[in-house]
Each structure stands twice: as structure tokens, then as C-alpha cells.
Image (cartoon, rainbow, N blue to C red):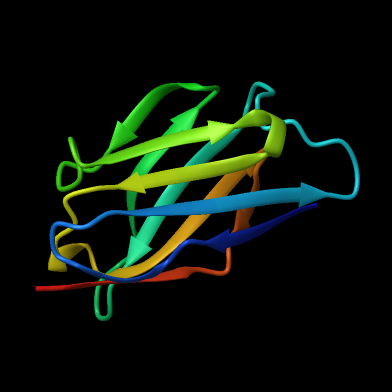
Length: 120
């Protein structure tokens, strides 16, 4: 069982930056650098389906939604079992609730969600 706690959301003006963090913990051993982990960030705006904005698997093969390419960067700190999403040049269209998602062995773990609001 993995517990994910998100932080870093907030209100920012267009053009600004935010960094979201997703800290993972477990009662037993946890090493997010182990093979098999999918680590991703998804967001959802009111009335819209949740979409993947950035993800990485096994530390390689990063993926980004077209709408955020060049502006968002996904990274991780294995020692801290923490996933990050650095968001720059934010746009009002980026507004939504951002969820981190860890998947391994068919188990899905979600963060509680972080509200990101970008004002014009």
C-alpha cells in the first residue's frame, strides 16, 4: 500500500510558475526507482475528463500532453520517494485539480489532488 500526499498548488498569475510535489510513503519498502513503476501527473477541470499531462516509466520515456510540452517538466527524487511537476509559463487553461498517480503491479495510487488556479 502506497500513500501519496501532494503539495504545491495555489493561485498564480499567467506566466508564472509552480512546482507540485507528490511524496510517497509505505509501511514497507518503497523504491520508486524500481522497475515497473508508472509515475504520472493528471489533471481535471470542471466538466472535463481527467487527462494525463506528464508521466514517466522506469525513469525513462517521459510523456507530455501536447498542451504542456516545453512548459512542464516531470522529475523525481528517488531518495525522497517524491515526484515533481515543474510548471512554467502557466496559462489560464492550465487551471484544474492536479493528481499524482503511481501504478505498479496493477495497483493504482492517487494523490488527494492539488488545486492550481491560473489567473489571466
